[in-house]
Image 1 (cartoon, rainbow, N blue to C red):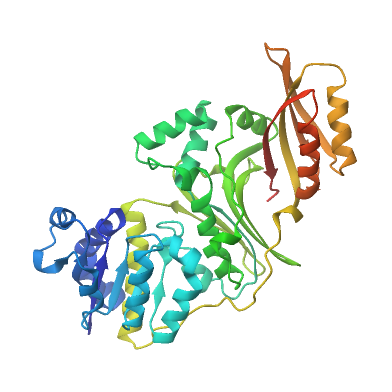
Image 2 (image 1 turned 180 degrees about the vertical axis):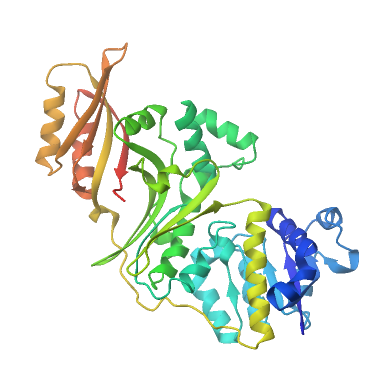
Length: 429
């Protein structure tokens, strides 16, 4: 049995988990998976990381080029992230005839076509299971187990930071600033949480999932994203009163006229399985024409969960090299479907308004909604405050995003409206 030699670039959170898993289980891969794997070289800017992991000096370098240029290395694992140096590492490794395993969602969501084309050109694999959902297997199932289906929809709770924050706001009535500080203190949120709380991380992930699920290239730039900064405990309470939970959901749907791709806080029925995904956990809910409804659930981040997916890809890559069949499943984005403008979305809406507590306010607002083709399903509650104002919460019937924006613009201009608070889309799964 040939020994597949591996070079690892990046010894951060996920990289350290890969080293740990290979040390723990590497000797068993011959019997478990039919391959022999050896981690022969690691690269990182910080030698202290290698020392802390017990990596011998002769197996460590600060120069990535030494790994890429080593003809004896079969697989390069890229775990430095981003789209700058990481892109060069990946493309140079593929050009050198090496299979690449990566967890880099930003790279695959932005330059996925370029990377996949390079792998095909050089007859090697590019595997990226850990780029979405951490330890949850989803890319493999979409490419293999579910390939006999026409995938109709993919819904994902794919950001553990925001899901943890919304869970704490829901269970304990805490406000956004409090739960963000707590998430940062516990290591669930970065010092700069922008990518998470503004939905950008989830947008990159749904771009990858949609490309695979719908066989049509979707990039990060194609995904309109809204985050959770404006969500209040009051919104969560109102939603629960109406039978919904609020989650940051990444959505991909196959439509007659193309694809519907978006990320935003979403009201979903409280009895739906996605509504019960709490804390730092992730879930991806997939609907296929043959399989029906399936859901993949688990830890979406962390050293060992993400490393589990990386090593799973490594084993698959080693099998392909051992059997000389690399490149079995390359880029499948052949349909080139149009991505629908968010303004053409048709859905129901939750709208919270701060208004003057005066006669005729409800009628004025309802009239503007009606003039713009927005039909109102219910008024959840009207609550007076100490300053002579009130809070009104509406849920609409289905309306177009374009009509809703026009109506809200006119409503916000009314003298009796102090502010348009939260506007949430309702997804009936």
